Image (cartoon, rainbow, N blue to C red; front, top):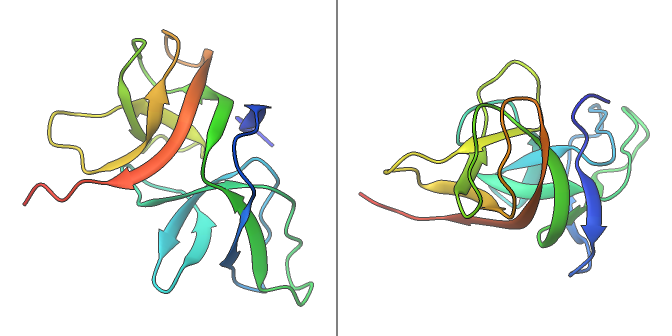
Length: 135
């Protein structure tokens, strides 16, 4: 898989989220969250992030639960320039699993950059999905 998230320092136990039986999800995929506590592949800028897939989910295998990491130090890939300490969001770039620097009014944060990186470089990120309601 392109741009897979790789765990460097595990800080949490995966949490079971509901997933669609017919969907395949690769281990290390960045996942977005919908109601009720349902995860699917992140595919847009500033998705509400569930976390990172702990294991592979094979399409139509009968499973509707998937372990999702919500904490830890991860290596992932940058979309654009990122500076250490930046809050990060999911990227709108066609390739899934990328992060970019959050704008001033960003609400749906993936985590915090622990390193500086330029476009397509990998960096360490402290995963910590959260939503800030600015409205």
